[in-house]
Length: 81
Image (tube, rainbow, N blue to C red; front, side, top):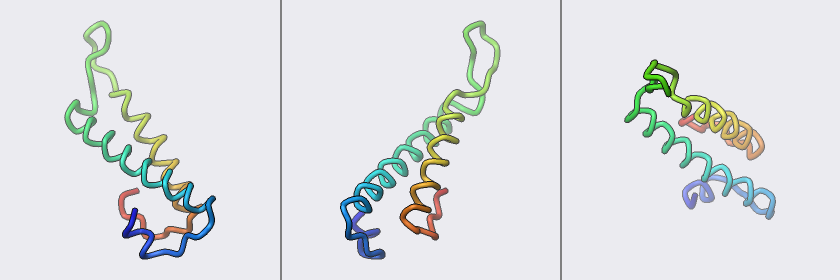
């Protein structure tokens, strides 16, 4: 977050709140991606059948939130989206 503050000029409380949420969302997305990497794209369902990992939906939701926050903050070079 500190390097982002050095690169951009966020001054209002609203901007700083959005930035904090952006940072949390970015960290969460990385955690979700690591969990998917460990568990795999498909997981075992309740009856032993292969099914899509439910974290795929969480990853998609988090990525959408991150994109919306980046747009709100006018961050255009977010490499991890």
